[in-house]
Length: 295
Image 1 (cartoon, one colour):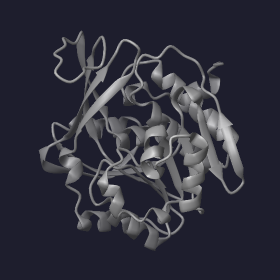
Image 2: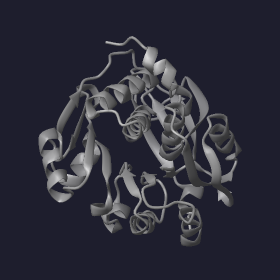
Image 3: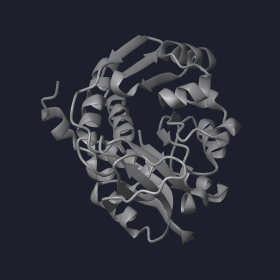
């Protein structure tokens, strides 16, 4: 089985601030750093560092050369990454003194997908292969439909949640990975039990991972409901926490781990990631996660 991540590649411009800006406020940042990121790239690198052979499909624009290099340096297969004219996808990220962040996203080259490119990439994959998706690229509905027709197993992190997802047939998804905000946007419910219940009712064939910040995470499928608390660390930067969790949880599925063990592995990897700055730079390798003694 092959794993394909059809996702975004962004340059992240990270500003350290005392607090997240409010409307109308001007604030001086104490530093600015540039990192490779994008939910797609972060999740590909997380899977690769967790030991998953992963292909990444995506587009980079002007100034995006470090993104390709980051994939190559981390063992991500770059056969399906192409360069296009125009600006690269990028973000402006504020990180406050407690490590919390807010992110402004510009799609750039990530929004230049064509159906011809999608067809070319998917022609190299077959029934039983896994497709990992987020919502930072265009043509998401077409990608889902084509992968479904091929019999691929589709994993979706519906972030950011916007109107593009309304065009997608989410009944074709095998596994959802959502946080509390995305869970509310999908279901209209705020309580975790209700979020899980409504998603289960709407998409009974799908597994669901719901991450709950400081309250840990929950996984639900036809076998039951599994809970995982957090591993406590001093938060430095939470930017790649969710993507690290996603990559490691997917690796646990591919390794055939029981859900409870997979949640624990992903939670531990995510905790290590938030303890240091940057997106891809913060993602730990599998050996580090397995050796970490966290409570």
